[in-house]
Structures are given as C-alpha cells and as structure tokens.
Amino acid sequence: MNLKKHSTLWVAQKLITKEQQQKILKQEDKRFLPFVLLTFIWIGIFCCCVGLFSLGYEHWDKIPVFFKGCVFILLSLTLLFLGYKATKTRKKFLLEVVLFLAFFMIGGGIGIFSQIFNLPLTHINGILFWALLSFILVFLSKREFLFLLWIPLFLGGILGSLKLELLFLFFEQSPLFSICLIEGMLFLLIFITKNLNTHFFRAVYKWSVLLYFVFLFLSLREFSSFSESIILFLFFSLLLFAVSIKEKRIHLFNVTSFFVLIRLVYLYVELFNNKHIAGIWFLFIGGFLLAFVLGWLFFENKISSNKENVLIKN
Image 1 (tube, rainbow, N blue to C red):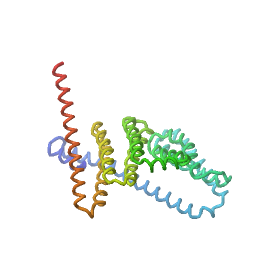
Image 2 (cartoon, rainbow, N blue to C red):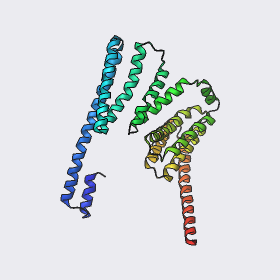
Image 3 (cartoon, rainbow, N blue to C red):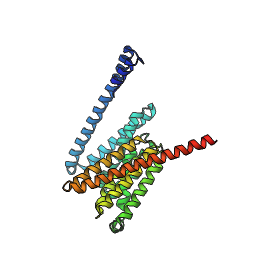
Image 4 (cartoon, helix red, strand yellow):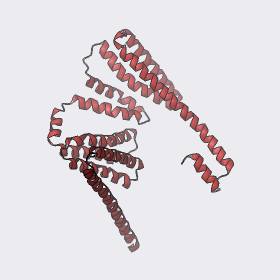
C-alpha cells in the first residue's frame, strides 16, 4: 500500500485531516522527484562509461602509449583535487564518488603501466595487486558498496594464484563431503556476520548468502543420485530459514524463499516428462516442509510454556 492509500485510510479513520494529507503528499512529491532525477543521472553516467569503455577497448591498440599515460595522470590529478575539495568542504557524497572512481582508476592504471613498462603481470596477479592497492580506498569509504566490489576481487586474486588442481580433484572424489564442508563454512560466516554492523562485515554477510545458494545450485550437478541433491538442498535451505525466523530477518527469509522457489521450478522442469515421479517428489517436499513448520511451532510453544511455568513458580 502506497502513501496515498495509507493517508486516505488515515483521513477516513480521522487520524489526520484532508489538508494535512495534501501537505504530506506534496512533501513526499518534493522528495521523490530528486530521487527519480538522480536515478536517471546515474543510469546516464553508467551508459556513458560503458560506451567509453567499449570504444576504448575496441581501439585500444591504436591509441599511443604516451597519450594513455597522460590521460591517466590527468584524471588521477583531477580525482585527487576533487577528493581534497570534498574532504575540505565535508561533502560526503562527492567523496564517495571520488573513492568509487579512484577504485577503478587503480585497476586501469595497473593495466596501462604494465603495458608501458612491459611488466610481467598476469591477469590474476594484476587483480590481486589491484585489490591490495585499493584496500585503503575501500577502508576509507563510508558505504559498503566498495566492499561488495572488493571482496570478489581479492578472493579471485587469491584463489587464482593458488594451485587448485588438487582441490578440484578432491571435490570430484568426495562431492558430498566437499559440499557439506563449504556450505558449512559459508553458513558459519553468515551466522557470525549477520549482526555485525561494519561495512566490511555487512558486505561479507551479503556475499556469503549469495555464494551459499550459488554454490548449492552449481554443486547439485555433481550428484548421480537425484534424491541426494534434493534432500541436501532442502537441508541447507531450512538451516537459513531457521536462522531468518529465529532472528526475525525478513530480507534473509525472502532471499531464501526466492532461491527455494527457483529450485522447485527447476525441479518441476526436470521431472516434467514424468508426472508420476513429479507428483511423488512434490508431495514429499510439501509434507517435509509442513512437518518442519509444525515441528517448529511445537517446540516454540513448548519452550514458551516452560518459560511461563518458570515465571509462575518464581
């Protein structure tokens, strides 16, 4: 229900007058228009950046190296000046924009100077070097968006520089143990960081939730047994459901529900040609989920009644 419907209901309940409703709606319109314009501005900037990137990538070899270096130095000095002005005048939004652009300038600078000086940098080493150099900028940012970008950059650089052949071999030999181990580690990260309010830990929490389900989806193909993959998915999904319900985290509950629904749709597509098997599996999953809910309610009521009995005795 939007504000107009809410305020109309408040007028009907005589909580506010019609004049007050009009003033509230006018004030909300004044706030909404800048938000819309700012959104279009950001979309426009994004499109311009993508266009410049595409043109630069297509004609990169034709651009003189000296010109690339001069443009990079000029842009870097401009960002330094804007960052100084933003710090001096305490313009937080401008400072965040400067930090955001500087984050990508570091990556671009590594690529340009490795080409100018013929540095023996591979893509993986360049990514790791980018992550290490940009950490100070990310740390200075008061928003978690840069941390959301930095974490996969750093992990990609670390994992890419390691010899993962043995790890992949172990995963192929023991998929069940490997999946349970990785999902358990991600669940532990989610559980530890869910109530931490720093930008870094909030970013870790969001990436952990995403990777939790992405890895669960990708790993299901490793099982030859169809029942094992479904039961494993239900088990790890219900773990997050339990945390979201117990901690009253609506966003986590919605994200978990979304991935479970996606998996159920995919399951029905897999079993579409055999309606008999599909019916049995969906009855099993439905009954399992209903049993989970009933069990949860039973234990909640049992715990609540025990607490009440203790209070009465005291």
